[in-house]
Image 1 (cartoon, one colour):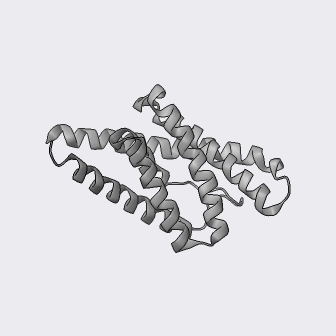
Image 2 (spheres, rainbow, N blue to C red):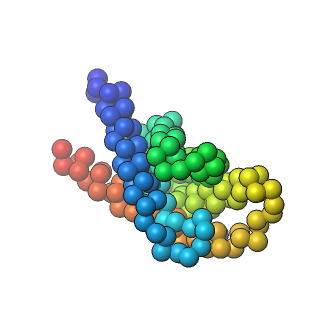
Length: 169
């Protein structure tokens, strides 16, 4: 397939755009949880989809574009710091565990990524606030498991649908 690099670049752009739009929309919706820092993280679905479809570097590009532009559109420098700390740690964990776990366990990859994201954000909070926030860890562990499960299942369904469409072509 001689247009593979162009197709990959176009898919990176589409996934990054979808992730960015999802991130911006989600940031405008009041959290269903009455706890600070807890949200679904739906934009992560697109990073999870990019990992098997495109590869690690390309998934990192989707995540980076989403974090940089999302923080620019919705937040402040502190938002960027929290997003980078959580997002980078989340990505590293997902990139390491995705291949050994496989596509059928995308939901496990997502849960581990969500837990890593929360850990990264807690570390950033301790730096920014200059105090220990580990007392909040149980809340973030529970929310990471639940939200990671939800986004992981959504990404798994999306991958299955995309693979079915590709087979039909």
